[in-house]
Image 1 (spheres, rainbow, N blue to C red):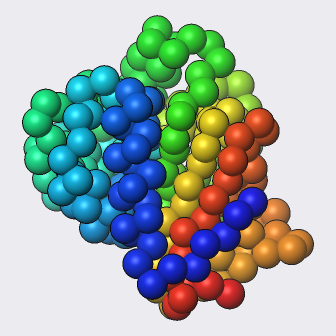
Image 2 (image 1 turned 120 degrees about the vertical axis):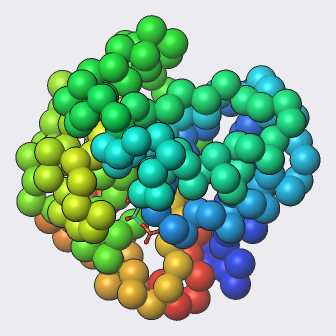
Length: 223
Ligand code: 6PG
């Protein structure tokens, strides 16, 4: 694991995203509020994303245009600004957590096979050390026989069911990157990535089997 503490970690993450996309990679976006600036900066670089495929690590079960939709945020800050656009594999929150998870799992297997390896997965970290929509103490953290799981109960706001990649799906990636900012996340960073890490933190189990893990932190989030 590599830890980069930078004044502007979003700028570094924007470079990674844009480079992976310009190379025609399969890139997984995260939700929440932290990545918005990284998405805007990536779009501003003006690369050609037409060879890339954009996926999601998690989604809230709300209509596509709802304020809480991760896809809506990515669309506004990144995807709508790209010309030409990449292919976008949206998680269909409107199908509900179980239906949406099953549909996404089928889509992943159809496009990437039964052992998908995304080129780049971007993740955020919650103050409770959740990542994607894998919340502490919830059964989805243990799921090992699926790539995508339905999450009936979120452990944090917004309190709507979710769809999430599972830990095995995440850990198969070629590269996993966390973007974490702000003092409110410092303790979660320590629990998820300290030595020893706290096993009750879902993000403590993000450890790519045969890929790279990099944390991009601002000084406030650095333990
Ligand atoms: C979501 C997420 C989630 C997020 C963290 C951090 O849909 O809520 O993808 O895992 O990355 O909660 O979110 P913030 O950046 O808003 O703190």
